[in-house]
Amino acid sequence: MSTFINLSNYFEWSLLITIISLLLVILSFILSWKNRFRLVGISGFMIVLTVGLFGLNIGLLNRHRIITSSSSSRVYDNASDQIVISVEPSITEEELFMALREAAQNYFVYGRSAGKDNQLTLRARVLLHVNEKEDLPLYLGKAEQKLNFHNDNHPEINIQIDKNAFQTLSQYLNNMNLS
Image 1: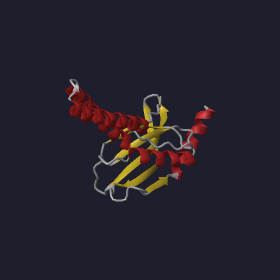
Image 2: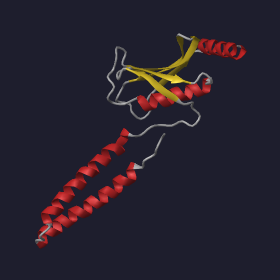
Image 3: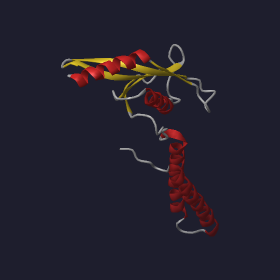
């Protein structure tokens, strides 16, 4: 289930309330109100809340969604430079291209450490059920993206789709339909 939370709206309101509470604190010290130290506590809490919302608004919860891509799920991630996603067997080459692009944009974060070749490799696979006890992974394509933090605006994503794997997948699906 995907939910959309507009954190920028919450951040703006929180910032406004924080500024108002800080002005009330200044006013309470000038006029020597009894509740001035309570207002200091409230203002401190609002500052912490506003900073937290700002941090979330920066990009922790931002996910790219490409409408024409097929759904995929992450099945392996070594938290460094390799990710494997699982896609549906009925996927087309265009949908796979868009799913790889979407996943590369979503899983590229600053916390990933660079591997031996300084790039994030994302591979898409389908499981073929050979018999009751054996499943065969078939890798349909991969996306490679440099873990270069200097050019963040338009990261270059190199997407390769394996045509032979799609032929194998279509033969497998045809055999499954015949039996």
